[in-house]
Length: 252
Image (cartoon, rainbow, N blue to C red; front, side, top):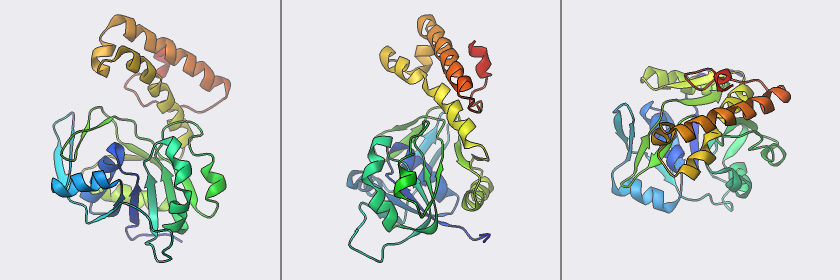
């Protein structure tokens, strides 16, 4: 069945990325429920909305109308959503399968926004009735005080092309918000893996990414990491999508 009406959406585990995502969806006039910790809800309510900004100077504020802090598993009348974006850390997913069951129906699209190969493999055995997908956040979001969330690097949300994400993408584009749909998420996931290879090096340097990459010793290490990553991806015959402004083969 083809859907043309906007789906009901839940952003589950809204922290830095989840609040930024929820704000963009709300700015696109979509029906969004935020499921987050009490601390996040209190901050949003106290500071009159979610405040997002980016490195290009964009600033927007939006007040959610629906914020939950827990799912009542004893209630058979929980709202069930058409799309659920799961924005928790990978190690937290195993704890929320009953919650996801309670707020989903047979046609729900559950999109796991955890970057990484195999990051939601277990979910395929725990949520057999739902449609499971993986999305990617190829940019950094810094959570500040007063419910402020800052996008510090370029990029936009990338999701698989489904019946509901097509409706979401259309709404976002109509409101000058960027996102991307793809028929080959595996290639995007592998591309993000190469990008993430800098994470450990950045942690060791203890510097902002821009400052780190301006220093020759660190800047010369990342291409070598990318070369190793490319060898791994090619050996396993994984497809590869470029998320950078330069070709990954340039790492060699």
